[in-house]
Length: 175
Figure (tube, rainbow, N blue to C red):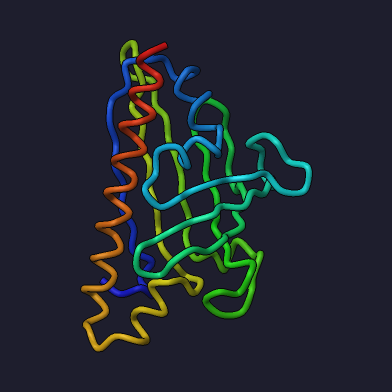
């Protein structure tokens, strides 16, 4: 798969907690920083403090190969108890022209929650591109087939999602 195709992945699991409890965790954009191997810290921007459409937050990331960087994300969908989605932008221009336009996002993330029995089916998904990112730089600088670079990045993202989902499950079920 090529970067221009907008590749992505989705993982899901069952959480033995009602959707309202899972939503409390999912809608706290700072929580994944406690669970993710890459996302280190999150802070709301511009007076925002809750997950609502249009709210923005900065994410501070670290990767062993490309180092540290900051992104700005904007919530593009928020249906309490059901869905939360955000576009991640390269506002600082680390990978090319700076942008705060969700249509030029370097990635799009989302959580979906579906009531299932007494619990919740929780899905997390990511799509990379269309904006420039660290994957773009790797593709341009390495004589390795693009598909291998994209597959490697999707593998890293899958591992991070699985860790985050397991962390949310553990927190939701302990309450």
